[in-house]
Image 1 (spheres, one colour):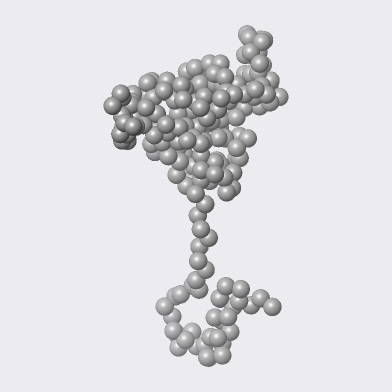
Image 2: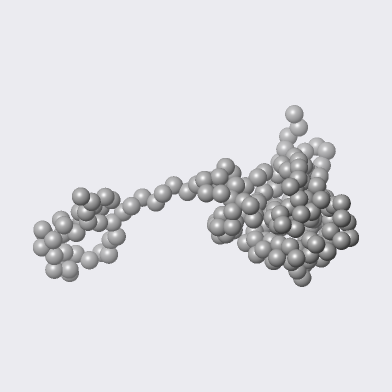
Length: 198
């Protein structure tokens, strides 16, 4: 088996071409119907079609562009949705159904906490995420795709453990607060996890 190691991404045009070629592995039902579409003041990498007739805006980002990509996806969805009927006039048999709406699929090397939180708030029916890694072997550079779940507790997103509950400490002493020993015990019972529960 050839040895693999991480590699910088190839030039953007080549990267997008490689990702499109690999996209069928994750989303075999998607059919690309347009590439490099000038949308809302920026290019949409490709527009695809799901079997139910819903349009999918696909955007590819670079490292550090994840949060910007979420905002661009919302703008491009809003741009495309009212134009679906126009597209149907040009290509009536394309399979688009305006009532099915538009979903966005974002592909980026990594999605940080803010981008994940934004995507989760929208849900997978509006926004889906995938991460990519470029690897090199003896024959050249390949692109690997992996889905990133956006639903709470979804696979592909590491759920953060709940924070340990610790009482808030100010550094003030009982003397500073003027608390009696009895008042301090009562306060600590209320501040402890489950404290004050009958």
